[in-house]
Image 1 (spheres, one colour):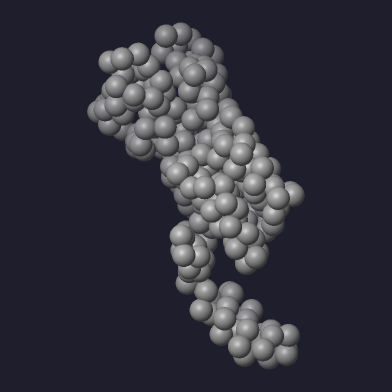
Image 2: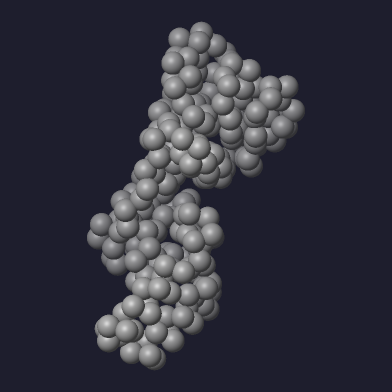
Length: 251
């Protein structure tokens, strides 16, 4: 509606022609690039623009989607992006930023509403950090302050207990763990806030590439623990952001 209102105001002011307005209206719901249909209503429905999942796309396709999103004044974020993809994006957006550990690139053109509630991102081990960084960077890009607490798994649970202040000060907690995935249940039993569990594919053979951690988290006896898919740091951060945003509205 805001976009439509702006177009009508520009038409009345004589800044655009009727044909230009009709062209904009045609692309307002989505823009068809042939290989992709960009959802231009995503931010209106969800509060966050469409995010590009780069894995499986060519560097040219990612760059083209980015170019068309920027043309409409949207912020752009790409997940599972390698350096080659980022280099291609940089050719059309010199202000693009790359987060290597998280495998995320961003181009920020619009101001993002900042939430005051903290999202804590906690990992069981150092090997879980790449997935955790995907979650942490996503949460930050969406406008959330993030506190990182890494390598505090159950093999040395005192490390977690000595950092309880981080958990207690957060509004939402994302727990990232592989192996047997026990950390999510432990954290869920210690706090009075939502816990988003992200299983990772870190672990030896019987871990089954994260399946054992996923099942352990789904079977958590601690209440208030929700679970996203294996290695899905982005999905965990998206849920945490939505919870955090609701908390802002409640204040």
